[in-house]
Length: 144
Image (cartoon, rainbow, N blue to C red; front, side):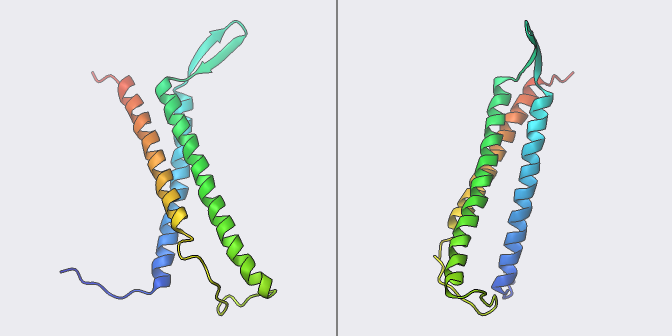
């Protein structure tokens, strides 16, 4: 039997916010590392006007997924900012400086649900990008 102990909601909320922020930060770092890796594996092609660069189709798919991840990441924070800005404006219409400890406002109970769904979506997209990237690496490596 698993032992449990009561925990205050603010502790749980703080732990969740800290963890999801760290995952988002690390995921962005992985996205940029993926783009750098794709750049390393580009191919130089001589053309009559000079040198141009090409990337393999598999790398292009991975790059597209990484750019999609970054767009979804932006969408997540944009939604969150707008949603909470609307809630904040409800308070500021009633008073110039609300008391942060005492002021309560009515908030849609599912205000953070889209943020959670977008968070899991962007993580899934980045994982797919790396699956494609790793598949490319495996295809070019020859074991002797």
